[in-house]
Length: 619
Ligand code: BGC
Image (cartoon, rainbow, N blue to C red; front, side, top):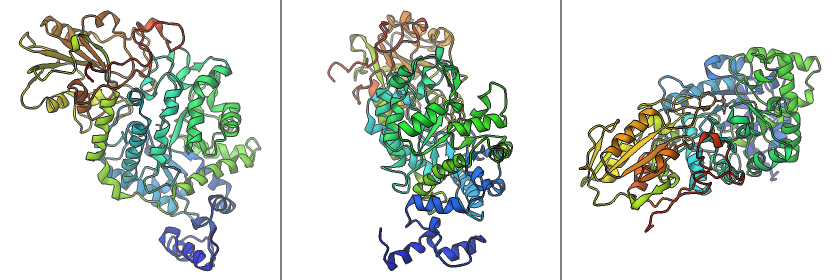
């Protein structure tokens, strides 16, 4: 380190861009009367020293405040200041009104100014689920969901998507992303299948490059570095029956072989936080599993960041609704450092204080949690750049990001059937008929975690639908006719494209216990196209493989499109052959729901194996 007088003087002027003593006076903070440098406010000091200096100044209430994360709808900026709150979150779909990038930045700054108005002026962090782009914000670029990114087999592309997402977040202030989900999906009936990069640990592990995209080479690497979160620790994709928040009944060796590796890789890449899973392992809720959180994640894998609980996750520890002081103590003692307590955060604060005073939670655990949280705030540069960086507002939904998303969509298309080379669509195919409920619907093609928590059909945010993409790429010389239900199709058309699939859903509500088949409406639409006796290509917009076994033989072409997001033209790029299909299945495609769980190497014969995906003949 440089200890020269000049360097020390310069460092003293670095805190918030003004002399430390002056900065403290302006904030009205009775921190120190003297002009002696305040170590923690001076970014010239190593993070470790800044953390210790700050910690020594904090009361128990200051420390407990850092450990709680309320939801924005249940906290005003004044309470962030009063209770020294360390972080606030937007849960899925929780947005300021009007929902646009600028009002997000205003909201963020409102909370942050309140946090900075406290005596110690510790900035808060704002957490969002930007799981496929900054997806709560109307107008943001929506990238394909992880299952589609797994199909690309392109970790560098995924890193760039992380960097683009971080830029869009930065413009709105949000500095903490509850992503990536590095779950290994083992049963496609699970409603979060699409949040997984794939069914074998190597796929999510390879795609942890997204962490580098979000954070940079290390936290605070440049102005758009945001904190990433590897979730959900551990085994969320391995629950019995694909039951969301259910129980993973496997021996430790299997947990370590299948579900742990992506976390090891995320830690190796320096992920700043890890979120505990709602699920259980052999009957024990992860939220109270000290062995896995403290012994395995923190000690064995060497994770030095902090662990956040899932949304009201501590409520589930004892199986009764709500939380008790015992559950608070169990979670914190297990190694959870920040607790996402959406609404009842005041009670949480009282419970944790009482638990510390009653000796149920040692002070050393509180200090450890604070060290972990504060270190990330210092590393992120939050003390130096606490407010939204509005220079990046224009990147939200900007052309460069949409072009990147379109490339990702094209790279994620998996061609599974292509009889008589029906694809790519021919230059001679002058009349194209498009049908299906997912053809002209941004909401359906984006899926869950888009503007709202569960997502919704309809024009929920600006983008290009798959139909619009087909029209664009088809160009002027061709006729593209669309009818959602296929009405009007006849033999005069050269080819028909049915864009069908699932209605948007997210966690919990998206679990399927049925036969995983296409809906009656979709089947009817496809039948109508087939009746015209022209080649039919089915484009499936879904968060998981569906049972298409009995229908497939009637289709000439079949493309798994996953949940592409706002840039539907990427689907058309592959249909017309402007981009060669390179997507490969990230999961085994079952013959029927009865085959679930089905995974590579388990001896079952799927309809299409992991890795399936055809190139075009001349491609
Ligand atoms: C989900 C998490 C998410 C959190 C905050 C929970 O319901 O399980 O993945 O990060 O909500 O929105």
